[in-house]
Image (cartoon, rainbow, N blue to C red):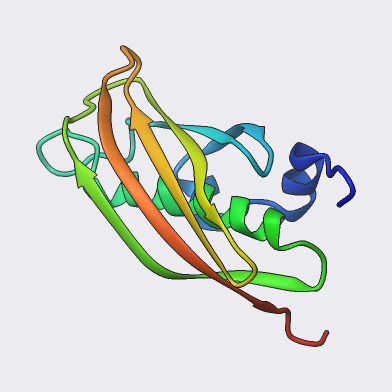
Amino acid sequence: MTEIDGMAWADERGMGPLARKMGIALTEFSIDRAVATMPVEGNQQGVGLLHGGAYVVLGESLGSMAANLYAGPGRLAVGVDINATHTSSATSGLVTGVCTPIHLGRSITVHEIAITDERGKRCSTVRITNMIKDAPAA
């Protein structure tokens, strides 16, 4: 398999309008590891904690992008399952998601995304399963 410049691929593809609205910024991207940050500000729930759904959006954004990079040209990865366990709450600053593959198969990928606050404390663990299929004809 030819080595792909993951960041260039991600820059060309983009993470989509939801990720932009939430302030998600990709800082590292390859098949083996994808990292992004997201601000707490603007993504909180009513009592000032980072919204649980925001953790999931960060995790799914990273996991889906990583699965699509792995899928390669002419293939498409689509999410079929996602779950999250929130173990702490970020209230300010940035959170960082680190996405690593658990399984990279011919038709299924599974990624774990560990999301930590600025002190390095884990706030959420997201796991996403993507199905890889042929991309629709253009």
